Image (tube, rainbow over all chains, first blue to last red; front, side, top):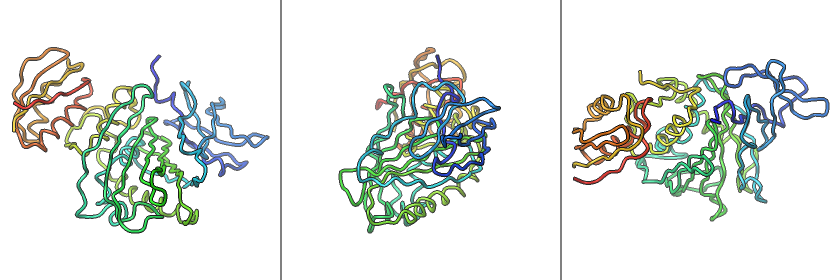
Length: 279
Length: 75
């Protein structure tokens, strides 16, 4: 049986943010309601029908279809000593697939996150490796290296940061990056995207970091600053939908990860938020 | 620089005119070689970075085509 986008899990709320009053929102264009039952457990309904619910990584997840399994795992999230950071949500007027693709775009760091995640003249993206891991059906990029003036809230001065990117679902991405205070470990930064419509989404960043110095507020503000810089770019991208045919775009070697993501979407027919034929 | 691109996948559909158009957009020269519905060869001529760009574009290709793999060989 083929898996559709409806069969995947999507974040729809912060578990800690749920109140007795319901949260009315959208998922893949359909109206849903997120609320707490009498026992304080989250429930999600669509047109009165109860949907499956899981709570993971501080978020409430649901699905409109029949999922093949649980919400994907991030084993590092269970490591002792990590601080789990619920960043909150940002509504963005862009395709949910565009939001993920932007997160995967390494080359934009020096131009959009100038003097934080990148800086000129350090604009070159070194060769990295990309694969679609068939055993887990995920897109992975490894050996990604980039010079960053301030790679994290806890970083002191510029370092060459190593990254791994992972796409475990059509609108979710996990970034593993060099952990400045703890060499040998990876900081985990995620982008969970709730697809509202084909051209709007709600983004729920979440992190699992080794950082004993920063306050929770400082870590949240750092990540919000980064994402707000992205938002102005995302809301002005044309075409609004993510093209699965390059059309007028000219992807280069640095865009290998974006191409692998789009190929993966195309192969599975995950086209909610995608443009199929070049304009 | 000239390279041979050996493309495999499900290649029926609009691939040929698409490759022709993408090559012109990028600015590389393409000669079409032998082809079937599951494999085809191209000779692509241009600067190395543009050959990379041609490979990236072809890996995605038009929506009605699935490119499984592109192998590149120097000519």
